[in-house]
Length: 179
Image 1: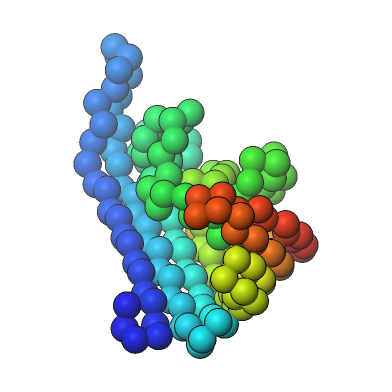
Image 2: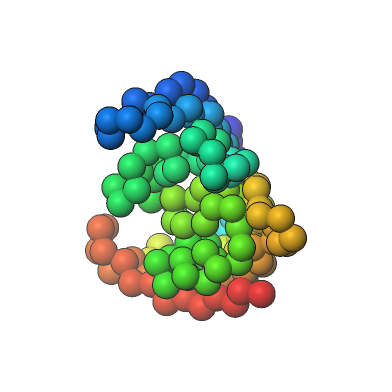
C-alpha cells in the first residue's frame, strides 16, 4: 500500500526435472514461468485498476518437456492454482473450458491460467458499505498456439454487483459478454 495505491505482484519460475513414475518412461524436463501484477488506485468510494497475467504455454506438447504454465507442471486433477482464488474473468469458470479447449491452442486455458497473456482494466464504486458495483474489461491471448490458429482467446466485459450480507457472506449478481 502506497497511500491510495494498492499494488500486488507474484512471479514464479520452475526449472528442473520430474522423475517418471512409470518404469521405462523418460523423465520430464520442466521450464515454466508466470507473472501476476494488480494495481489499484482508490479515490474515496471509487477505484480503478489494472491486472496483467502471464503464464507460459507449452512450445511443443508432443515432446517430453513441460514448458507450459504452473498447472501443466504439476499433476492434473489437483487444485494447483498458484495465485489462490484469482478469477479475473468469467472466461475461467468451468462452463467455458470446453469452448476454450476447442480453439486449437497447443495447451488449453483453464481457471489455473496456463498458456495465457491477460490484460485487464477495472473500476468500481462502493455505493454503501455493503454494496459494491464494478466493471472490468479483459483481453486474453494464448502464449503458444498450434500452427494455423489465431492466438486470441477473446475480449470480455463483466459487470457485477456485490452485496455484503454479513462479514463473510456476500451475494453477487453479474453479467458478462465474451467476444
